[in-house]
Length: 257
Image (cartoon, rainbow, N blue to C red; front, side, top):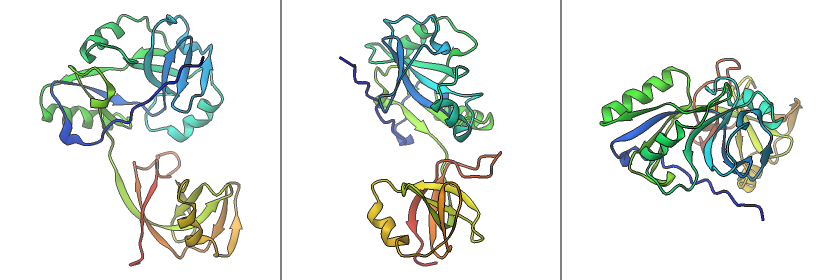
């Protein structure tokens, strides 16, 4: 029987920081668990015979990030490699899955696992004060990582881990809808697309917003409409290579504008 892997959501409430904590860089990739000879992601997809897991004992269960390149703010670039099971994907290990031991003990054992060019243990630095946590987070951001993860050393489960990612907001125009109706294209008033915001589960609101607007054109992914609706978009920064927003989400419609 196929084992079900559960991935708990980490809190983003920084008021819950417990000390001392291991502070780690947050890689930009796909969260996976090594279990029973394969990697499994949060959607249940399994990957077998990946070079990055070659030689790992099958009786270990290890949580980590499957990533492409440097793992630093390159999610969209990495997607094609992740979908195709690119043999150059790397595995960054950061915890044991469902281990009955403190995170401090887990780190000690993780460092005994043999590493390769495509497999390593995520760097951890112990912080004993909130100022140290802030300093380490800032350092990882300057290095180009997505953010940081804060893990109390006495903790035994991921439910006490904290995820720290910077959020920014910007007002943009609705300029189209994806052809599969799963996302709204947002961008500048001249029609330049800066990102796609998922509308899965919000189809009714989306239909009311743009359901009767005339289509003015199309590209490979989207049907384009006249940009006459403003929205406030939350995002995680700009992707340098493309100028697009990383992980944009619609916060609200700017009826006042």
